[in-house]
Image (cartoon, rainbow, N blue to C red; front, top):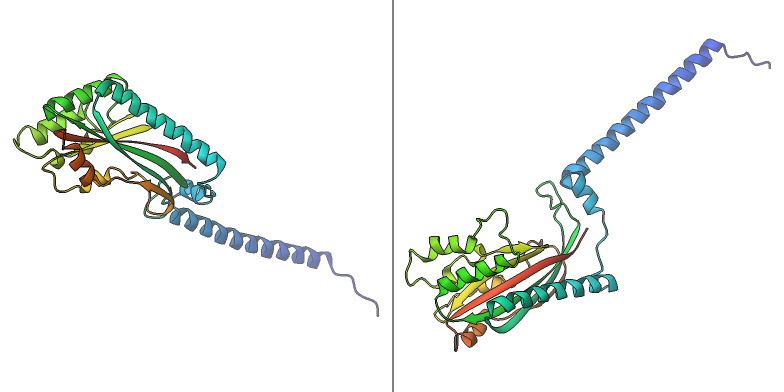
Amino acid sequence: MKEHPVPPQEVRRHNVAEKIVTRVIFAIVFIIGCSYFTLAIIFNGGLGGLISNLKPAPSPNSSAMNARREAVTAEINQSFEDLQNILHYNYYETATHDYCSRGDNNYKRSDGYAYRCSLRITKFYGFNGSFRQQMINFEQKIIGIGWNPPSYRPDTPCEKMLEEYYDPYPGKLVSDLPGRDCSYEIDGLSLESEFAEKETRNFTLQNAVQKVSGGSYDEIYDEKNFQDSSLVTKMITYTDRFVLIISIQKNYFQN
């Protein structure tokens, strides 16, 4: 049986219909894709957070990470040597904290990084004399070798702290002072401090200053060697009047 040719008008209408259906399907897929992408951006704390969450986790014990760790350890120890050369305190003990964590990037918060590893070294010192004058000297000397207060602190944060919290209250325990007001930074290193004396009974802050700051609670590596501040203080105050705890920290990996 002979087939009748399809009229050109029918062919054109069929082609137009196919194009319309294809475009509609494409538009639907595009809208769904954009919706999913938009939701992904929102729930990952923005485009930067989404990119961060797609980055791979580091291997904390790899040769590359060990090399980074050794380099930052040497840098922090050198900073302590530079400090001791000008401060001449009596050194007693050391604590360390090596910590890697995943950044928080979600609709509530965006850290802007995927993973971060930091090393914090804390040293315990003792000294005698006037606590106020010793801390003024401490601040002047470390600023003199290049340490600077953070941008949110006054030019002499430790002196300002003494004027506000120590001078008006004779007999106040130095362990009750906000020691971390005496904080400084240089070349990616951050320094924080705490104080204690023989009469100190609560060592919450003195123990806390040994821990890496700025990381999240979603840890992937946690190597610590902390000191019991109470026991170290008892040892130091057998011969020295005051305890100064200095912590220096630096990030050695971030992606």
